[in-house]
Image (cartoon, rainbow, N blue to C red; front, side):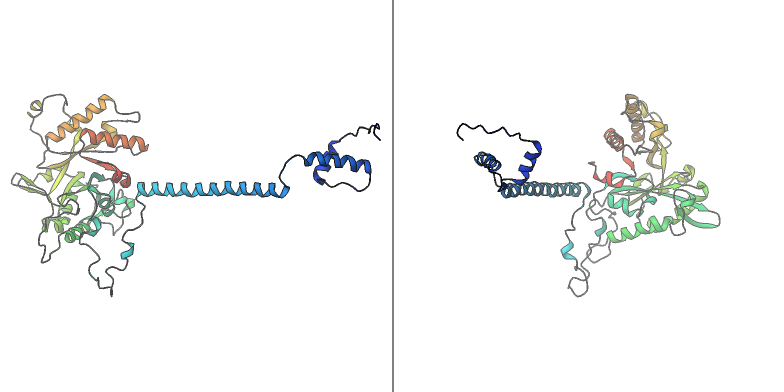
Length: 395
């Protein structure tokens, strides 16, 4: 056998696949086949490799580790996103939740649950005007809770009816949404709460904002129907505020600021606003577009004119941003900035507050840029539709 040469055996792919599946098992018959298989097994045994079971366990552990790390990373990412959302949108747990039974009968805290000015106790007033305020889920209250110092009511008067209905157009009017039910009466109720008559306090000077009780609320009344016919009804329905001394008024050449300042716009008749030269408690929304003055000219040149509109008869000076300033989707031009500065100069010389309406609300970046630029240039109040975004701005 020493010199006998073993015939060369061809290793077919099929036999290799079969051998891989059968591992080290060899048939009993066939010495030559068994000898060749044994030699092959000895050669392979010299190679260090994990047992099949160990290899399977190792792979499973690796897979489990990857999945575990993935789940952990997902949980951490979700927590991070929730934290960011809470900081941006104020989604926080109620810190007073543990006091849920405070003030309830049988707890010994009856009558102690609510601070008199609880609704607006921590609201910081900001220079924004709630445009079309009556569209909000809770007119007046939503705007005040966001910090807006100005709200707007569109009023309609119909023949044979002394009620003033509130809505953007006649299709939106309903019998229960009136000037008094949405604005006058709630303001009276709020001011009664901020000015309680107790043995510890007996005054009526505080406004609706507990943080800044000297801040007036500007009630812009947009006359949608005939001005001359609507005027006496608006004046009459303000009596609950007037009788309490809560309306800003002009008397004997001086302005006396109070908790609510009423301004007429739309079809408000200017001649009726100034008809009484000694007293008025409804002011006019003057045309800002007519007040432009050269921002580079000296103030002495502008002061030569005796203005028709001033602080004794008007409060706002307003105009359409789109019509008088134009589109600013690519930023403000030098001419547009100059026009704004001229408007502001003319209005401020007359003692009036500058307000632009019809400012862009979208894209958000453009809107924010317009807000920032207007406030930076000296505009006194912003018309806003998005109360939440306005309340998050740094004023």
